Length: 96
Image: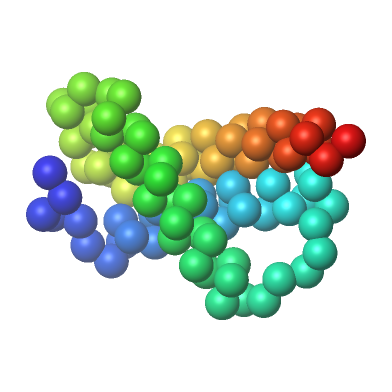
């Protein structure tokens, strides 16, 4: 399934991962972190979103999403923003 993923697709998933991390940190008002930590967390959360999408959606629709990396970036970025917001809400409730 992942044999045709290239550099463009990797960046396509790092950017939504970055949006997830940024939105989580913005909504939780967390302390500053370094660029390397942002990169690592962005790759981690981007890959988590890809794996979850590959498990949830049928193989044909997942291949269609991967066929157009720009559409995938937009879709995963939107999902990442929502994911960061909801996880931040849960984290804020746990802290209180």
